[in-house]
Length: 285
Ligand SMILES: Cc1ncc(C[n+]2csc(CCOP(=O)(O)OP(=O)(O)O)c2C)c(N)n1
Ligand code: SF4
Ligand SMILES: [Mg+2]
Image 1: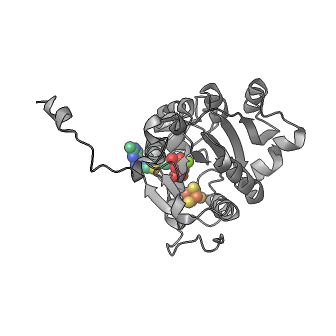
Image 2: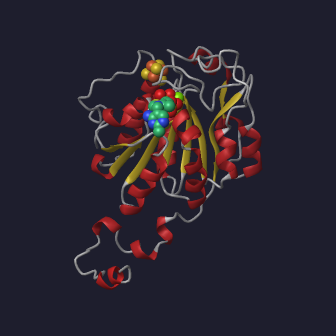
Image 3: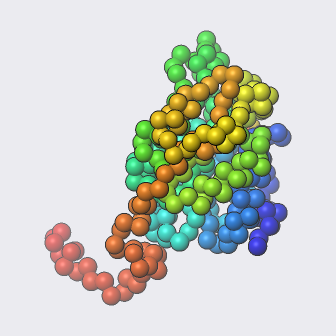
């Protein structure tokens, strides 16, 4: 077994001291270690933002993607070699702003990947602009009089897009987060893990204290995660009590399991020498 400590890399960590990304980083390494996954069989994919640096800090395969395109890259990796455990890391700006179109399609296809969204409700890397999950009234340099729009509700959004696993964690509770990451990885199908990730530098509203006073665990209140309508109700719970844990989970065939071309072997292990495409090429001339 590779320990969580051994999954660290030599790269210097440049997150601000106290950043919520540290909690996600710890939980991710613990989950990979506890599931006893060989590092060479894991592929991490990121967008661009503070969250994205995580792929440099974990000693597995990794692909530093582009802003908003985590899911197309992660889906392609999974379909090229479905034996890999593929985990996408996006920011709330990255995944719920520019990249949100990909989210619904990945859900409905049920691509077998885990998608961890580091939701700090702000654009961290670009120094604190309002993000799609910033709360109404949120003041920043791009909304100096307070944000007018309602925030994206990621949980409700993916429930409506037929996601097969929908979860939320808190970076200030790495133990609980480790279990959620393990559950998402073990789930056969698309799993969203939205994580409340305090940005201690730019978001002075959604702090560790803010969440500690409000979050409660769905599993401690006997939430039935097979009931989609109940999951919707929980998705809209916000205020003095905010739920974390598994909102919804259901089994459905994964996209790659329905493709006859890769039923025997992953695409990456298929021989291409014997394939003759000369007739196809001629058809284009
Ligand atoms: C296509 C494109 N548009 C905009 C940018 C500039 N940019 C880089 S990171 C970022 C936002 C980061 O916010 P978020 O995704 O929430 O990540 P965080 O830094 O908060 O982890 C933006 C707008 C970019 N790199 N590429
Ligand atoms: S700017 Fe915010 S999200 Fe980025 S490293 Fe600093 S605390 Fe973390
Ligand atoms: Mg962000």
